[in-house]
Length: 399
Figure 1 (cartoon, one colour):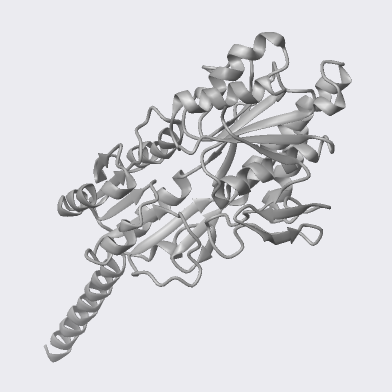
Figure 2 (tube, one colour):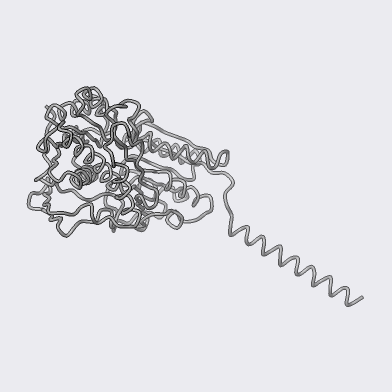
């Protein structure tokens, strides 16, 4: 009897140990069954930038279904961020994403330490101390801009070879919102992509001083076309430039290169290609981290700078879409693939490089020589290249 009694005790101990071990493992993998996710947009889905960002919300719904509840606030101006942010926080959101540039977000994040705040970066975050629940992120857009420039360059080269334009008419136009480093970095990498195919190409830039104005953007594009630009691109937030190109495409020599959202429907003849930042990889990974109680930067795939993350083609953060095979020059896909392959291999130092000198528009004494090259997004997700390559770029005002 004693032997049976001892055996029974030992069995109970083993069962208890197994139970405690399993319970411990369950605790270690304490994944939430349901969370609330908030999105605050600076515009609504009728604008390309916000529409593109909202695709990440769609991806979340597709992946998690009823395990997440998504709450959205649209058309929120930067200085009006506090009220909708507090509404989403008080509604029980576990994580909130922002595609605006409000400086209120990092301040308010400190008041809600149990909520993760993820904002598209709007400044150099290197060396800036923020609360552990505040995160910034941005795709390395210059990579897509450069490949877009290759597409434009291939088209210009074809137009020259077919006698449609002469070499001195290799002029591209760019409708830009503001002279921020983000915008300057984008249009500089674009023209450098063009020049990798057509070394004599130049670019005219027209600022609207507005992120989202259909009338101003269309007017700026029309002015650039009138001034002889044969390809137009943009860093603004409406379809205005694409419409202007489509209306002018009857001449057979005006084309459009898109940003954020494909314009193939509104500009089926003139649209060549679109580059976009894919917000889905970061948003999905950040929600995965919250679901599994992990630090966001331990889960996301990208270039990590403390609480700040960026990524390019290699991590799926940048994408080229809708190459128009009816309008693009022969060999364009192969030229695109060759450049993208370089980025996929981790080589990006060829973009901001060449016998070029740049001048800081805010301080003419501040210059840069690109013979030794410049690496964008090396230390932060926000693009910092802010020099005008004056030998190839001309700044115009809207007339």
